[in-house]
Amino acid sequence: MLGELIGASSRADEILLSSDKTIAVIDGSGVLADPAGINRKELVRLAKLRVPVEHFDKSKLSKDGYLVRVEDQDVKLPCMSSCVHPRVVNDAFPFSQLVR
Image (cartoon, rainbow, N blue to C red; front, side, top):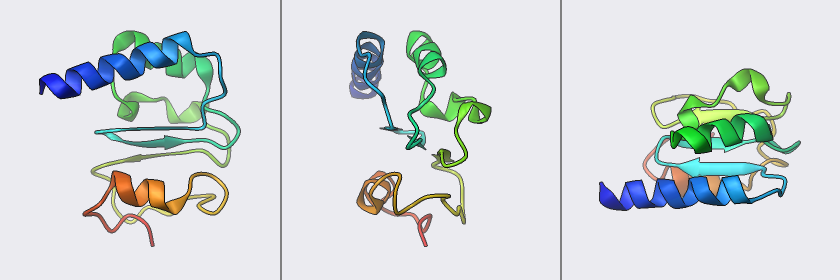
């Protein structure tokens, strides 16, 4: 648990200090990706609250963006070939059948 808290805190600090275009964030709650860039204002909101990506407001994603929570099943990703490499999703969900 402590490792998760330290990891989440470190990730939040990186988001708050960065001005780069972020296209993917993976944590214990899911995968958030958007090839157009994840909405910076919403990402900063989550970082300040120190909450996982599952709390991201999906209305702030582009048409090719997606949020897949660990409890989601049978999810079709809008842009698997151009968003995030499939290996990233497979690594995030090693025991899941999410990607088909």
